Length: 443
Image (cartoon, rainbow, N blue to C red; front, side, top):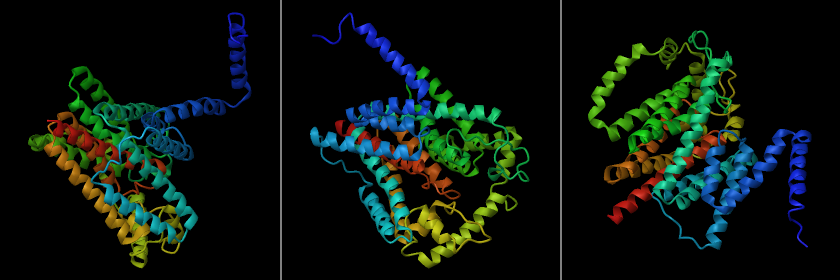
């Protein structure tokens, strides 16, 4: 006897709809969303690890850190299962392998010797899962089309977040005074936060994406695609400016100079003159914000100087071993070194933070990683005959430079999402290298 036939299909559909309506009425909406979204996400992740990567890109601005870590874990499990069941190709090596292993080894070692072992292990888990996703990316994204899909998805999600940020600028009202020194920035009332709850974190998210978004304008062949890419870049840039994150602005300025050097070096003098000429046309609130960069009248600058001095004192005592990996170990140790009662979760400087947490060896291995990244990408840009890959690689590398410059005034490997994006973009760069290298071999 068939359970589903012409006589039973309508009652089944009606009953399903009634159950769905009852679920929405009697169960909190966020739980309904989870009940629907989680099974769909699991099906996508285990069907193809590539879909898991896309899902992760789309989810970064919207889900909490704990859920994001769970998503990363599922992607890694799916990746391992696919490699075992389908006997996919052997391990793919990259020029970054040795530096990554060395950096990870120091993270593990300083976790085991940490003054706050359990919290440091939590921070280590974030790093290990993020490096794991880097491995998934370099083994899973195999074609130029797949790389383009991942990058464009990032840009479209950033565009959506930027639209929200622009709306916030006109509707959010006054920003938390913690983020604005009214005395030195009297015209600045609003700093947008998007879905990140903090303008500096939103700026960090966007500065990863902005240079490669610009690169797509030049890399696209069709005029329509160039136009769409230009519109996306302009909207994201507008939101980025509205974060009023001075460290991010400096990072982006450095990124743009490098991008011009790598792609349009002959126009550098003209662009410098044009940039200087455009300064008087900028809104007063922007000029006001720029003028406070480095000012000792600005309370946030003074706050950072106190943190840096205290951190340097801590480094003097722990320059070999560090106090332990992660911000928890830093916070516990910093209680003894804080000046003027200024307690913090991190030093607001990536490089001081690395020295404080992991000692000289963590600092050296990180510099090794970054040096190898830039050396490899410069070689790719110089040697590849694929114009598209040249632009994309330049854009991705400039995004990395932006956050590294931003790291002078901010610890850009502090939060889960920041750590994840750092390793994702490293993965994208190594995929671009692999594709560019394969194209040269085919020729």
